[in-house]
Amino acid sequence: MSSSDIFIGEIIGTAVLILLGGGVVAAVVLKRSKAQNAGWLAITFGWGFAVMTAVYMTGSLSGAHLNPAVTVGIAIKDGDWSNVPVYFAGQILGAMIGATLVWIAYYGQFQAHLRDPEILAAQPAEEGLVDQKAAPKAGPVLGIFSTGPEVRNVWQNLATEIIGTVVLVLAVLTQGLNDSGKGLGAVGGLMVALVVVGIGLSLGGPTGYAINPARDLGPRIVHALLPLPNKGGSDWSYAWIPVVGPLVGGAIAAGIYTIAFA
Image 1 (cartoon, rainbow, N blue to C red):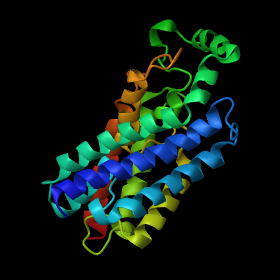
Image 2: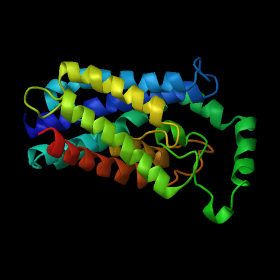
Image 3: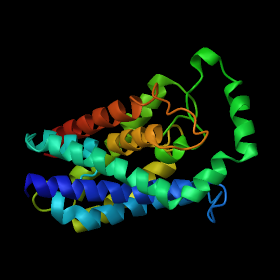
């Protein structure tokens, strides 16, 4: 596959991934959404279906990595890093496009939610519960765009992201790749989607299971840029964890694959 195919495929695939994944979170969280309070099961299955849709849509173009951690894992396995920057660029740009589309699709709900007196009244009270010097800078809708921990503990949060990503990337490397070994195949797309659901159900509680640097960083940038009323901060002090953790996890998974399976 050519570099242009990879770039275009990763933009489209990652945009669809974030549109449907971020969309289900918006549906569950935002006021005046028909799916409000649908719960964690809806979110985890929504993300799984988002992965499946994006993989089937763009697998023939780019191999549907859709995740820098997957790209790193495959690059370590193959020893070929030539297209890694192209994959990364497409994934970040696609994630930003997908997050912007979520905002457009739920524009009215964002406005209603962020102007709701109950939501606004809750924010100062929540921030007052913690030491102001260490207070997390997270706005009321940041979770639609990116992840954040329920308990803010750096080593635990980082370990959780590493562990979840090891499971994901090792599943991709052992079961999900197509005949060329460069991306996800048809059967692999379904399998990986189910693995993502499993990770969300089992390991998503502590941090919201980013397990994908582009999925977290791209939408976080969009949250910072969008003209959302009363949106609060983008929690940049936490932002490195869902980037570094998955990249480390992808590398570890590739090491395990090389030792145990290759």
